[in-house]
Image (cartoon, rainbow, N blue to C red; front, side):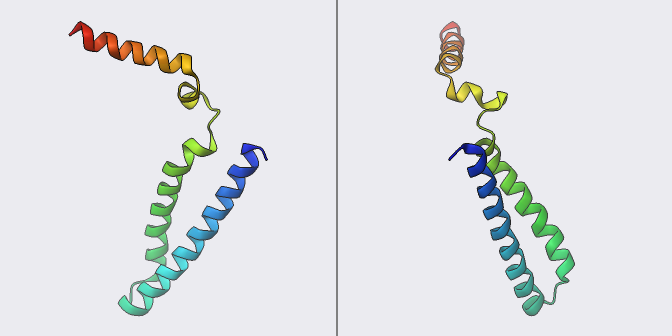
Length: 90
């Protein structure tokens, strides 16, 4: 399987879990705390989308330019040498 297919499956699974989570939390909060369901969906929707974006960005786009240095030993060596040079020059 290629990574694009796996990324799409992970997104769909994440959205399905987020959907179920939002519904269950909204029902619980509405029944027990009498909070408006629309308010709950707006707040929890933003939180879930933010968390999914932060968690999935590096996993979904491992070939993008921003993360290329993580996979490439040459970039990593240059960065480590730069850090060592800064530490030794002080």
